[in-house]
Image (tube, rainbow, N blue to C red):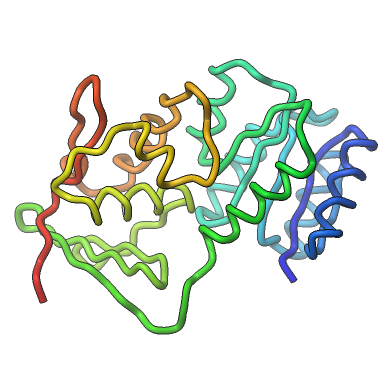
Amino acid sequence: MKLIYIVEDHEVIRNGVVQYLELSGFDVKGYGTLEEARAAFQERVPDMLIQDIMLPDGDGFSFVKEVRSKNQRLPIIFLTARIDESDKIMGFELGCDDYITKPFSPKELVLRVEALFRRSDVQGPQSSSRSYSLGESVMVIDEDEHKLTIDGDEITLTAAEWRIVAYLASNSPNLISRAQILEECFDYSFESYERVVDTHIKNIRAKLKKEAWIETVRGYGYRFAGKKIDK
C-alpha cells in the first residue's frame, strides 16, 4: 500500500483529503505543521508528498526544496490557494510533479495521485535500455528502471523530468512542441501554462553534463539532439 503524506494546516481540508485517498486504497498520514512533517520524514520517507505552501511555521516551498535536496525521485504535489503563475513556476522550479489550486475537486486529486504513481512506478524487473551519443558523450535511458546515465554516471531526475527526457529521446529527431509535451508526458493539462515545460527543461539541463542534449526551437518547442546508437 502506497504511503502518502499530506501537509496542510486547514484541518477540514486535510481530513477530507486523507479520507478520499484512504477510500482509494492509499495509506495516508496528515500533518498540520512543517515540524510534524519533518519528524515524520525522519521516521519514514513516504511514497508521495502532498504539500500546502502557507503553513503556520514556514512555507512549503522551502520544505520541498529541503526534501528535494535529499530525494529527487519522490513524487510531490503542491495543493495550495496560491494561484499566481509565478507561484506555479516556482513550484515546478523546485521540482514538484503537479500543482493543484484550491478550491479543488477531491475526485480530481485522487485521479492525479493515481496518474502520478502510474507514471513513477517501475514497469518491470527486466531492463530495456536505449543509448544515444552526443559528441563523445553517451546517454543510456533505461525505460523499465527509470534510470538515466551519461558516460556511466547516473543522473537523478524527478518523475516529471524523467518523462520529458524519455519522450523527447524516443521521438528524436522530431521537433516537439510544448503542447505535445504537456499532453503526452502528463495525464492532465496545465491549461495555458506552457511555461511549465520551459521550467522542467531548465531543471533538466542543469542536471545533464551538456545543455546541448536538448535543443530549443524558439517559438515552438524542443528537440532531442542525441543520436541513437543501434545495438
